[in-house]
Image 1 (tube, rainbow, N blue to C red):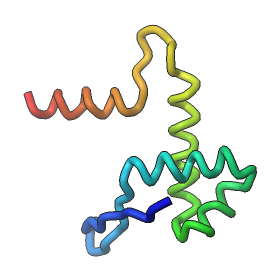
Image 2 (cartoon, rainbow, N blue to C red):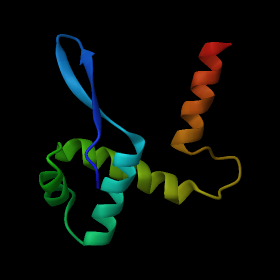
Image 3 (spheres, rainbow, N blue to C red):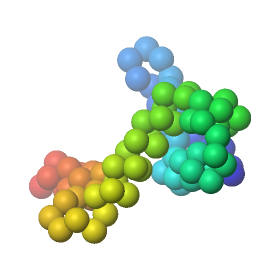
Length: 86
């Protein structure tokens, strides 16, 4: 898995912003490896709290997939962007 990130200024500090592909791959690695979130995060050199958040979000989205009338996180983000543009 390629380590991809962009750095963004948040307040007075720069923080990494990871690509969606990297996040999906990291979550898939937790699922397929049988390792803990903390162990995978350590191997990837990222914050375990970041990976834990991505994992929870992915788990919630998988649960909601296919439920009529329920939007996934990605769909909610698109809707939010469309609302602010209009």
